[in-house]
Image (cartoon, rainbow, N blue to C red):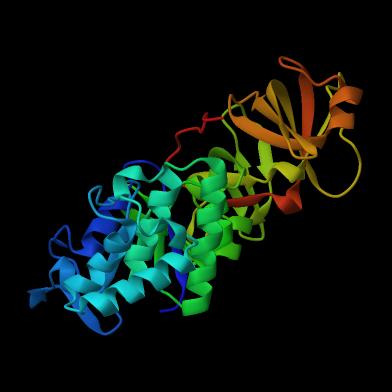
Length: 352
């Protein structure tokens, strides 16, 4: 209650299905849906969508084209048998709150995508939902409208203490809106934790890639105190244990999560010499791509084990090292910044 949870995961993992089950558009099929102390779906009954207190916004705003924006927003209160005058007063207040009061008399068919999204949000909030479900409502908006909508949702949820479930593929939505993060993979929860925990120390493949963390796959070696990962080509990557490494056994499949700022690049050495310093991993890599990312340059790399690694370096380093596509380099990674944890399979990750 009063928190925002982001539901993330690859396409087909079940995110929209969760939203439809929670909203009452799909039956839980033997499962349970509980909102606070209310059982909405499960043994003993099924509460219809219109009586759940759940407002669902999807990629399509669903604004009624023949109605004015004001009547669109008043529709929810009217369905709850609130009088016309009171419903319209509430609608005007909600339109003003989302910065769309000047659109009150405009028909839904005359609204732009960003305007429709604002009206749809106002319409949802006008019903005083116990839970607001946002199933990628900002995905179809342009960058400017998306940023405005994100700020609006953040402000309204903070002001009213709303309980929100937001489905997104955009890490900006997660960082700006979410208190907690749930990662779905193949219909199951693969990871759950506070937004800070998941974004700074992901334990699932999807969350790692979403945050720009490289995922190396191989076979676990060592022990919980000094874990390591043996790559396909025999290279050994040492690191610190993930939270659940202790449940894994050496010889089983594992992952090494490598944040891009942990990777330093050096010219390829003929003698294999490694720069001195704290414990490090050295991998021979080939540059596959470069992309500007703010003040830094993101360098995409391919290891000799045919897996993908990412480094974040300065433009000066790119020039000094002559970094370009097909350039062979040494990637040096501090072991303390590598997290080693068990995986579900031995299949190498080659998705750059």
